[in-house]
Length: 162
Image (tube, rainbow, N blue to C red):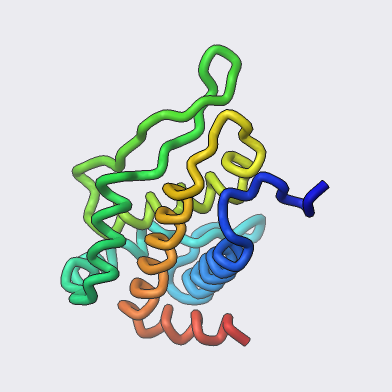
């Protein structure tokens, strides 16, 4: 056995950075105005956050950010489905009626779901390492920029680094 994730489609350092940044983002959202739940559970409210930053999101001037957004929207991660009793992949672009930030952050969450809920790690029929790397790199770029669009989230994100 080659470690706990023998089929991981990413370099270990990239996977580690992605899960760390994503976790810090979720912590930051739940620690600010972007949590939902109650006494039984709590989760990050990504859609509320996306809606709140959408105007600023569309004005981020950084070319790497714009390239990452474009990639996630034009080459969105596929969604795992059950077809005739077998796990398969569907193209599943975001709803065009959603605000831009919400569409992109939905795709970032799908990248996370595909990688860290076993969809890509143990799926022997799926192997597209180059695309997986590009999706994770684009998602990382987006996450690093969007936390800066809300002061309280940015502060909580920085606290999560310690």
